Length: 451
Ligand code: PXG
Image (cartoon, rainbow, N blue to C red):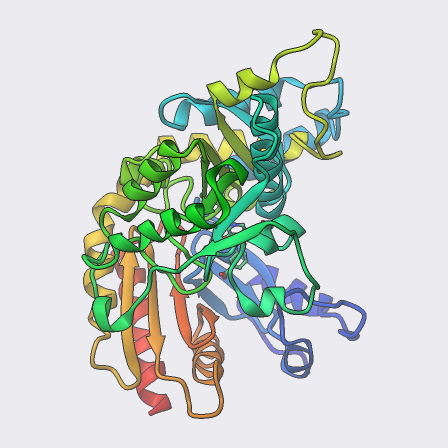
């Protein structure tokens, strides 16, 4: 007997449950565990997913940090449907279509200062690799062709392209894949539990870690370094909030040495901190911004690099019929993604979602820090509508305690993310206090039950 479900959509979906899970090689997933105990989602609306067994699951992670407007927003759905019927695809090279220009103009208007030019990609990984290429090419065009080195940071995540992996600082994402890019170095990460544990928002301790950049520059010489790339808030490795003054110092040092500063805002862009970008939140101006996810509220894949005017202008030389940047993707500025992006930006503005995050953030902070004292909770961190709860690992079984919590939460109808023994939360920006209470109420139950 199939499970009896209340929702017609869920009932139809139950019938669609595949009976062979083997052919699909799942990304960043324990394939064997999943296929033995599948967790299939078949519907999504607002703040909830519907599971294949017909349960409503509260989305504590906005999908994967991307569905900022909530799921299946009618405006975004209608825009994608209309675009699919009007024009499915237009060549991205040497041709254009109106919505790509419109969306670029909207994004440039949202981005502060002279972050005026937008290069579209299809993901955060592509945005990062694009930004790294732009940085190196820019240095060459301005007569600094020896500047090819890239500086990332330990515990940084910049996607899975060879560029992003190389500047990234996650050992498991790197060690299987050979020597990666040459000429890459890493800043130390900014986290020290003894100094920052249970900080609310930005930690007081750690700005001096930016001075490590001076040491790296002294080692390699500034004339060999093209760019530094960091996430303003390192989200994937467990919400490492930048210490007060840290980003400011990185900016000063980069400026002093002619090095470009890239902020990877794949997660922090489009309202996650209650501002358009983290650039606005921290008041620190990079030279390039990478983004994705919230750009289309996750409805169609899309990423982007936003460049300051001076960088774009540096490329606009030579004969005017010549291609200025030999880079791009078949699907750069895809019409469906542009339609979704335009609709998402409209929804953010009409519903005042970024302001809403600013209003909700203190409540979010209060509630997540309310988990202090719950068994095995060894740190809690937060900023904007992001939070992390770090758990004491089970001796000899790293990541198991958090993964067990993830499974138990899902059983209780709550979707969370885990990385190692850290639980990460980043709900749709449409969330309200009631659902915030539900998230932390269920989490407390899960952690207490786990003993
Ligand atoms: N940069 C940053 C800062 C990211 O967070 C990427 C680049 C790569 O984006 P794409 O679109 O290529 O995946 C990301 C992606 C998680 C999680 O739970 C984080 C990401 C993706 C999936 C899961 O930590 N970030």
